[in-house]
Image 1: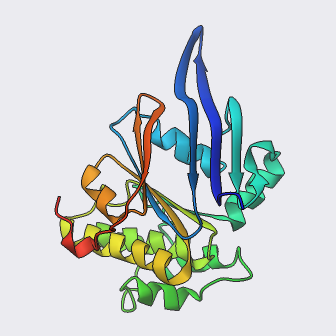
Image 2: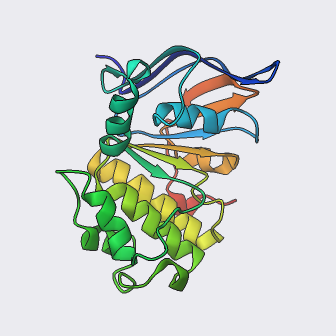
Length: 234
């Protein structure tokens, strides 16, 4: 039985004029279905490049990427668009909400992409926004906007939820609320969650920890004792 997510000797080289910049170098790792995986490293470690390749938003230079038995790195543009639409949920540090749609409408747009969606009202209630559904993004705090973005990502029940510094723009308490929600999705619904962060304290919540530096994978470890979010300090 092969792993749910598999990176096999993945490299990414960006060409800038005559200069080649290696963003990823022979990156190999596996993630099992239903795990929370935290990828940690400083700025420039290659975390975002790795996430974008896994999410079908960037292509690799060499190597192979698999999700759920399918080789994503062989997909053409049309297949990649379908993959992003149906299999992947994205939570970015910046929320990318549509400003002239309400919180509910922002989430409904996502749920319409899936036949197996969670109703928008239910998922907004799950993230604690039952009383903010008809508000527009400008009427919401940063933490509330982030929760709308997470509800939007969850609504289509993606196979894989990718989170880029999901607490980076949040206060401490809201950040903990968001991470608790992500951990619960993994535990209760078997969703595979990948979080990239420079905050090494978050590794305590992960089933699997991948440490990166300068485009290379330093280590891949499994946490035998996962710490509940409320017990983590940073």
